[in-house]
View 1: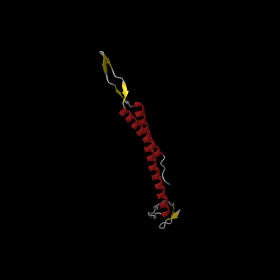
View 2 (view 1 turned 30 degrees about the horizontal axis):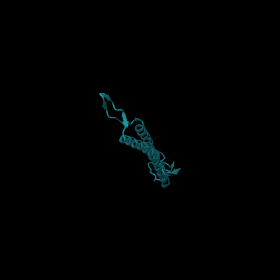
View 3 (view 1 turned 90 degrees about the horizontal axis):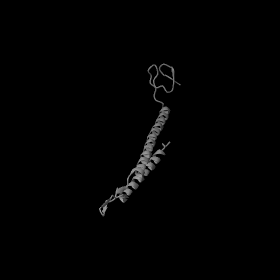
View 4 (view 1 turned 135 degrees about the horizontal axis):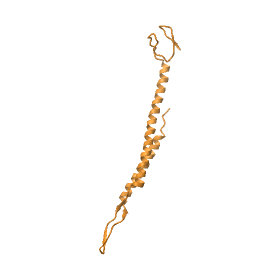
Length: 126
């Protein structure tokens, strides 16, 4: 509690203006504590956003890796041949270039998951 110098009323320490209109100067200790509390809150909010981005990257990486591993078709249609008047449709065969694309896609997805995991471990410096 503090006393107003104009009206002599007792007011709480956190009050910046008395009922009579007197304005109290800000307490330096209160300002330091308040600034420190605000800085910690901002650091937590920033860290929360980074961790959310990390979670999004993990799910995106999982989706990319899964699509390239299970949904990407790395085969091409083989040549069609005609032998003795009979037509043989070519079967699908693996294509080395498309297999490489599949491997790169899976690796990119894994990389996104690793980056997301690193961001999820981010903690604010106290």
